[in-house]
Image (cartoon, rainbow, N blue to C red; front, side):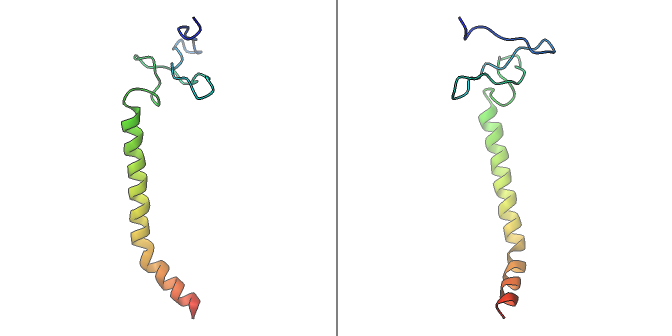
Length: 78
């Protein structure tokens, strides 16, 4: 079967088993479980944490810059 075949990458590792929306295979090297770092079983947790950190960083930057932006806005209105 086509789905059971694994393709060898240049360094001898196998290709990730993840199939995209159009049926294309992921081009990254597979780990021991057959999936790459991005599509492995703990990938949802790992990327969710990264997204939360980005959101927190943006909110923190907005909180720090808010007084400066308000002062600039008031100065431009005058």
